Length: 498
Image 1 (cartoon, rainbow, N blue to C red):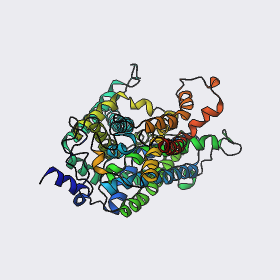
Image 2: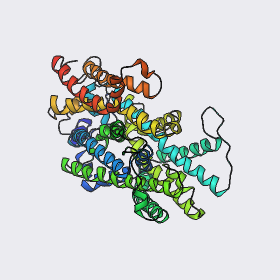
Image 3: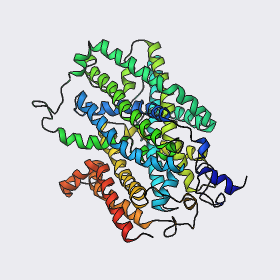
Image 4: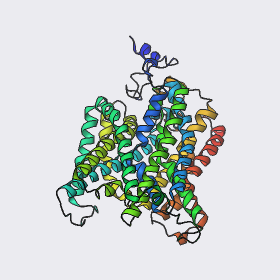
């Protein structure tokens, strides 16, 4: 079969012989209709598997630590996931219709080379998440060793801010991740098949233990909100709610962009829409409730709030239970890490040089970058995790989402020239491969949140910035998305070829 025939089988409007193009490789090619086998249940299972994870647990618990009561935290998370579900479904449309991955989808609006901007930004965020998940798995291994062998670790005295044992366990678990990447898709599929039920069972056992030890759900869920009248943060709820909501939206802001990497395998648009709607918000709310309930219970049981499940598990008296729980946590974390934080950035890095960087090489790049991002610092406290990390990258990904949706749904009416997406001199080349309209729009969309972010990370004195500019960071994803959506439509109207 000729190259042209093969490409035409992938997408009906692909007629040119573009397999030799520097923009093409097998991993980035449109998925053939015969291989688009994901139904509604497949998408629901995907989100159940990815949502039932330790960061989801920690996300909810972080809100409790900042002063919310249980229903305030759950409502914030559920609302955020309903919001992010909208761009998730919209961006999935192109993947389902044309079988193309996220980096190729970006070529229509950013240009054949400019698409590397959103692709690499998204990939770097995934590297951070890869590091976070790897640190969680390594920390579980470390806690097993300390508890089982009665070790007495010394405080961290090095520049990294962690002990030698912690860093060794982190590297050990990182090595396991690299081995799975090397083994390939069959190993990844095996892990995903056992991951979802494993973490859900572990979470429910966690909840049952907390119920028994705290004396029922009454003491567990009766912890007052710190924002209630007479409490330490009375009257400050909205000051925490909006940055928290932005952070919760940012939690899946990455997948709301690169969801075409998965939706390209969907049978129909109905399958991806209903499957995602059923799988994402409800699972996030359920698993977050487990985190909130157990964290609230630790206040009653231990007299202090433990928002890290690893710290909670180390208080178990039975070594057998501890080891089983930690091993289960490691296996589940490994599966989530590979599926959510390697598949997509591997495609993104491959997009830099399709003829030289394979999917596997892209996965290895993700792993090495994840180490240098020092994930233990991102998880140091709820402020750095929720307000700086999640809010910070939300300010970057929001504008990208606004650009993609404005271009695909408004400017192009959901019509793409698939062959042109793989041609260096085609209609999506713009100026030397870059769309100046998209790049300028992205910068303008991210700019309003910059002063507040610099204040948040203590790189700018808040006394030198107007309070209004500082407060914009609390709405970073929303502002970035809205500004980019409007500005892109205006500039594209003025300069359609730029």
